[in-house]
Image 1 (cartoon, rainbow, N blue to C red):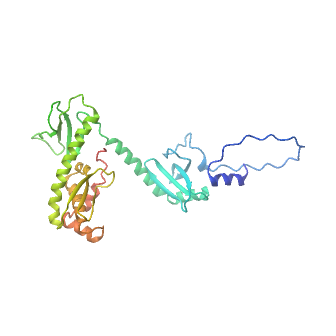
Image 2 (tube, rainbow, N blue to C red):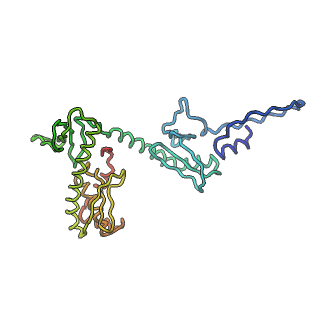
Image 3 (cartoon, rainbow, N blue to C red):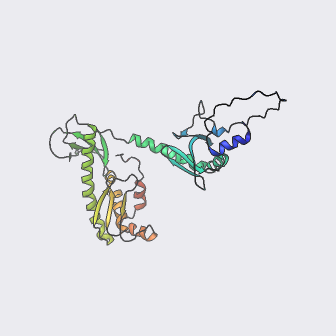
Length: 304
């Protein structure tokens, strides 16, 4: 392929579908010209196959590159933008670039951020594995954390309310406490999951109100309304009118961690930012908040 044509194809993306070859009229033979050697294809644009399978491959990958000794296949999209942008998400590395940016400049930009990209890809891979491991199979005997305890689903097969069973007298630190559900042994996973979730929501609201009333006087603030949240990454929020939102999944943590989030949001009723003054306010009621805050990144919390 002619070098100029190859550059044009690289610059504007995939080559168009080949057109039917036109019929040529007979012409007198002309002196043979020296063949122009075909420009070798960029290694980064060669399809990933055979032994060189990418360790991290985006489902829509169109290119691949060696980054920090790791083969990464990434999805490239061009658009109306001025800079090269890159995002590491659950599916892998996605790159967006201006339409006019040559491929070698895109690869150079990725090499510049190679350490960051590979680290984020590895962290994402670990996180996905942990998420799969912590997915609960909702059946008789399923276990999950609750306020520092481990609860075990027990199907009672009789009418009544969901209740916590008694803890054995000789129970040690890792003891499992039964959560008795009034469901038959034939209950489906959907029914069991719904019953546990409803119970947890009820417990969360009761505990949150209790802890809000505990910390509000100590912080000299008043809260007016509580709403339960199910956000994927946000544990709480507060508005200046006294409205508090708390993620019900906080009940999967120990009480001190839950208390930190409650104190955090109540502190915003005094300081609506994250300035040093705000953190001093949090520290006044939760002195060890940095360690508790770090616990919120615990990937052992069940997925819902």
